Image 1 (cartoon, rainbow, N blue to C red):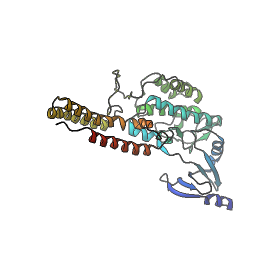
Image 2: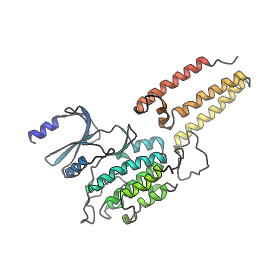
Image 3: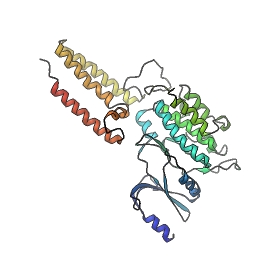
Image 4: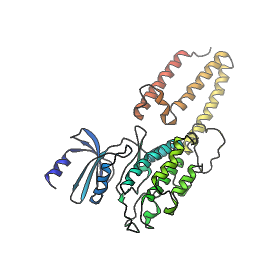
Length: 361
């Protein structure tokens, strides 16, 4: 290791490991006064990261530096603060059509740019897509990416995330851009349903047909390019032809023509149980209030006021906090800051209510 490499390495102070094997490390760039990520990859990936560094795409992490030494390669890239698609789906059950298609188009922008450089990602999965603080989907981890080689008939290794990797990645054929198209189809289905296509395809058209075509076992029957796939989904998103964001689906769901009530939208069994208990005790409480104060005007005003006190939090703290953007100055803040502000505002309103609304005599 020469002195230049030693000097470059000394410019980064480690903060913490981001994975168990220590190949991805959150670091501080002393020379540029910024947080970054150091990734140790195989030296053979140097060519790919050199190409990635030259690509300008807001949905792709910036490559700050590439340090090659011995048989390894150290990549210094932008640190993306946010949550993965995997974490979001684990919390919500599914992602609504509009949001899922928005994220899908973001990632397609990245793939369109890297495919032009001959790079195939080969590991598009919910864990490798991060939604940042500006609600942009960012594609990470080119650790098993490769440059396309039309002279080869098969890949030399079986790689990729189970359920999201294309059939070609299991030794059936050589991977190409259509392998990424397959994974994108699975990713879209995962965002909409919470599971991979092998467990059931999202059944609402026209997204169902797009997913089925993208994930066809035969590469020649899929979309020919990521641009073609992006256009198919992007036209739905831009033309506002998608279903409303309250429609949550599973394999047994029937569209009854109304928006599911809070607690039952995602299909999460624990949320359903909690909702049943909440609504049961809420109804019992209403009858108890009516019995206590009767149907006098003061009693009814008091009862209705308390009903609102219980119902408003369902809206205020639901829908992943999107309604908090109406608070001046909060729209571009982090989700944590919005939550703190929302809690403070709610308790201020609750305190004012307790002071202003008297108990009926």
